Structure formats: structure tokens, C-alpha cells
Amino acid sequence: MSSKSPHCREAVVQTRNPILRRQSQAVGFHEPTGAAVGGAPTSGGTGSPTPESLQQMFDAPPAPGALTIGDVIVKTGILFVLLLITAVIGWQAIGTPLGWIVAAGAIVGLILGFVNALKREVSPPLVMAYALAQGLFIGGISKLYNDTYAASGEYDGTPIVQQAVLGTLVAFAVMLVLYRTRIIKVTGRFMKIMMVAMISYLVIALISLVAQLFGVGGGWGFYGVGGLGILLCMAGVALASLSLALDFEAITQSIAAGLPERESWRMGFALMVTLIWLYLEILRLLAILNRR
Image: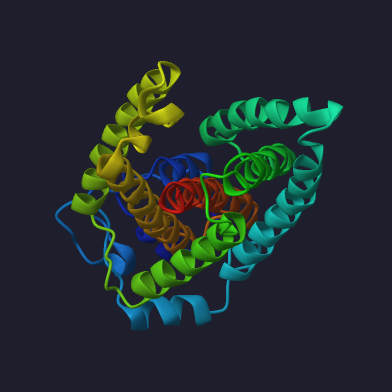
């Protein structure tokens, strides 16, 4: 990586984003304290590029073999095509002898998620395998919501799966606009707050899962306890949406650092993880709100 131009090394900023940190280490970068994109000093945390600097960065011709925004878009698109293919299979499998593949997809997807997140060198085959496994799970769980809940007497028949997909796309578009216009700036303080909030939410979700086993909230855990459940669901949607800003920042910094094109698979993987989380949170919120 030392053969790259000097500005690439200066472009790496101090960050607490584990994916970007692993990328920097993988390509031999060192993380200078307080260095920001463009060489401006900071007091720690990431720099906050302006909309103009972001546009200049995306418009600038990339170095041969360097990561571009087009690479990220293509790889992310490939992953979601794979996910949609197996999601159809997972949807059709529910209620048949092949229903077990949905649970298998969830387990394999969880394992591959950890492997891909912790792996120093990104592996495109493993990332694509994750998309295929998660597709089985997403398709199956969506079908269960559609059949078990939306079509039952408790619900008003609202097509919550379609609404959840639309809601996910809208949230993604809104967060992208907010990030590109710098209305939301990913700073060190922002990342600290997000980390604490996500850990706290995870703890609450795990406790709710235990409570769910004892029938709390009509089988929904804390999420089925009146207004508290709705607030928790809304918090989950908000956290998942804001997490997209962290993904956008990782992509921006990776392009500025001149990381190799291969890292576009890692960026696509990160976006997929966040969007799956967001979709599931929206799906659960809609299921609760549409109860009669």
C-alpha cells in the first residue's frame, strides 16, 4: 500500500468504526491521531467534510484499483439480488416440509455475520453466502408475519410486509439526504452516543426475549406492553436508521483513503446488515400498530 500517493495515508481519520478500522489495518495504514480528510486537524473523532468536498471526492477520477462509490453500489446491488432470490424461496418454504431451511438460514446467517464482521481480509464468497442465508430468513419471517399475524383476526389486514419494505427504502433515502447535506454529521461524539444507545437497546431486547418466553406482552415481550412496546419499536427504528449514517461515513472515508476496490464487498455487507435490521424493526412496529 506504500506505493499509493501520500494523500491516501493522510486521508485516513481516527475512527471508532470497527469496519473502517479493520480496513485501515488490512491495507497497512496507520491511524494518525487527529488527522482528518483534507489534512485538517481535529480534536479526535472523524472529520466532517462539507457537501462540496464530498461531491469533489466522488467526482474525482479514482486511482487504478481504488475503491469508488460505483463499486459500492454495484456490490451492494449484487448482494440484495442474491438476498431477494433466496427470500422468495424462504417465503414459499413456510408451511411446507422445507420450512426448516428458514431456521437454518437464520443460524447460518448469524454465524457468517460474525465471521464477516471479524474477518480481517474481506471474503466476497462469504459475504455473498451471508446474503443468501439471510434471504431465506427474511423471506420466512416475512411470511410468518403475513400469515400468522397480518391475516389473523387480531389485525386489520394491512399489508405490513409491503409497508415495511417501502418504509425501509424511505428511511434509507432520507438518511442519505441528511448525511450528504451534512444535517447529520458523524463525529466522535455521535459515534460514542450511538455505541451506548445500541448496547443499551441490545440489552433491553435480550431481556425482552426472556420475558417473551414467559408470555409477557402476549408473546411479544416488552414490545407487546402497550405504549412501552411502541416506544421500544420506535427506538429500534431510529437507531437502525441512524446507523446508516455510520455506514455512509465508513464508505466516504474508505474512498478518501484510497482503499482497494475489494473493500466494496465489506461496505456492501455493512449496508446489508443495517438495512436488514431496519426492515425487521419496521416490520415489528407495523405489526404492533396494526393490531385491532
